[in-house]
Length: 434
Image 1 (cartoon, helix red, strand yellow):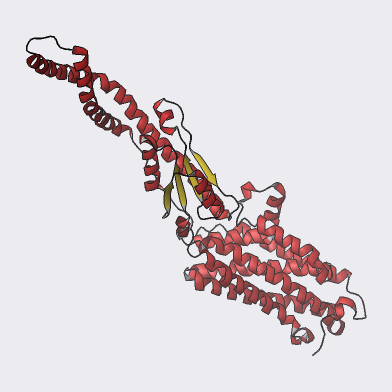
Image 2: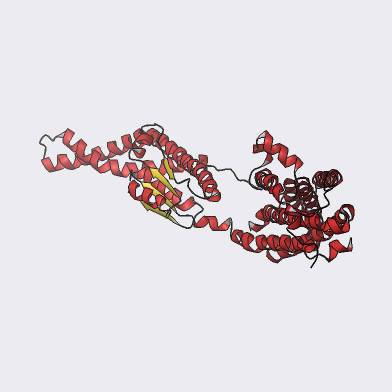
């Protein structure tokens, strides 16, 4: 067994895995430091083609209520589309010509949107969320305008009739006095009075109608009880996915190096002693990897000592399960050729891991993978640990079963195979001595 531990290649896998994991932590997670707050920097364009009273109010309301720093208003749809094509704008809200007319006529007006889905997942999701919010804002504004219009129709005859009567009385008295008893043109005087009274009455009507509609302009309050992390920094959300990917990739490569070393060293140390040495190396290497990964994560993400200990334990168990699984497959398929199985399995787990796609939205195949492979277990146990939610027992149980299955596969592969007496082929790639 000493031949195994004295071979430098026996420890090379640990160095490779540690380098990959730390590289992921320090190279990937800082990109999410200012998310989602920086999502407010996405430029939004409002295109008001109608330019009427109601459409102007809707455009102004959107500009005041959208949660973005850069909201501009233009009148040219082609210009807005060009801005979106060259990614100077993320979304365009288009108020088409005839919007005001449709509202006044009691028809359903149209609001159009222009988006470019050839963008990042975050930007595409923000656009969809924003479209829903804009529709709600427009509907609320239109509801208010409809109420104002309804009350205005009721008020016009009530206010107009006495105002016209008073105006006609005064105008007729002045006209009769000026005519010195001669006949006057009553219809002409009525038109003049109406032209004078109508603008004043219109202002009074709109003021009273707006006041009457105000009590119905009610919006619901809301509150959110956040059971998970209250941190706004998206590094907290993305950390479990990326550290799990990094450790898995590092251990997959490390296990292949270790099995190639096993295939060489077994000729001078015996296959079972070398296999036991391989297992001891795995126990030590996975612990070192977990310590380095969580320590590196702590440099970027804030959490207390209890969370550190919980993350360390779950990630160590995860690393051990991954090592047993990947080394078992590497033993079964002769080291390097196992990449044909292991690499696709790793890629499948990126989607089945649940970091970007929830299990409820997965197909049955990916749901099965999420339930039986290690990555999902570590991502969600890390989620729960960082958020202080607990409930990690089921994930731990699955990891233990994966580790045991990998160990059995590896032991069976060593028992049935590796009986050759001559070092050749892949077994001769890594030297047994230095």
